Image (tube, rainbow, N blue to C red; front, side):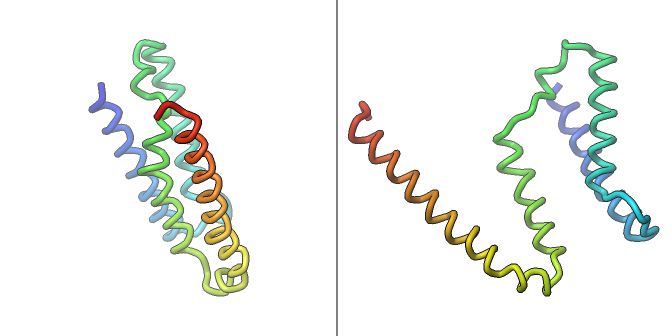
Length: 123
């Protein structure tokens, strides 16, 4: 069953890149490859649910670890890669605030709660 999941995932990624090539070639006035992939994903999910019912739903459950470790970084890299230079430099202040400021805030909060867990916990 895991092999089915990986094949379906590969097919969806292939469809994503195929739609990117089609959009680049035909330049439609509406839609984005992500929206087309989401629509196809919903159709595939409903089809699988109608065909197999609840017997195979455990294979296709959302895993946040896979999403944050493997799917989100390429999406963010793609967004940064496709950003226009003018937009990037006009938003440099916001990027700096979110990049450095939020990183420092997360470090302080994580350190504080780690200190509390070590001091008052049974670690």
